[in-house]
Length: 192
Image 1 (cartoon, rainbow, N blue to C red):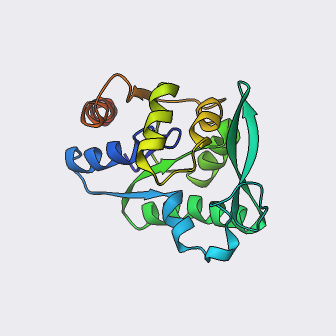
Image 2 (cartoon, rainbow, N blue to C red):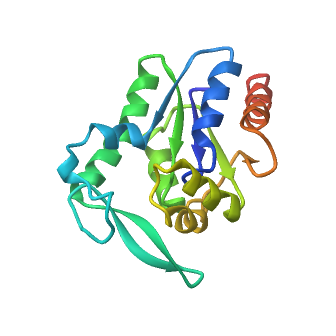
């Protein structure tokens, strides 16, 4: 398998699952997420510390979900350009013989279509990483490095219209158990 794409809300456990996958899979896989690209961007292009401060990169916009205040990530033109580069970088890594675990918070089915186009010709597995909202919000607060309110919005958006090959729930299973479910699925594909 060239690419394993983990899609789920922030704090759902994607990074923990990715680390477990790296330990369990027989071939080495790079772990790459949009956070890596955001960390490379000039600070002044993003407005991630205070909501409703539009910027050319990424910024938070206040919204309402189920009658509660929440935050939705938005992209300016530079942010869109960086996101496209993120997708094409994964393709280039695969073209150079590397395998990749993608850690993403998709903007629903529309972004999955973008991934499918960017990774055309690559062997990909799309994994939905689910977690109960109460647990997501608890983790979001506990982590201390996430904008409180973003998990609620992401939980209702990231899976909308996305088609998965396999799904896991970090509410019901550990990161290691979820990774094992994914490895079992991937191993079944490689035997075909």
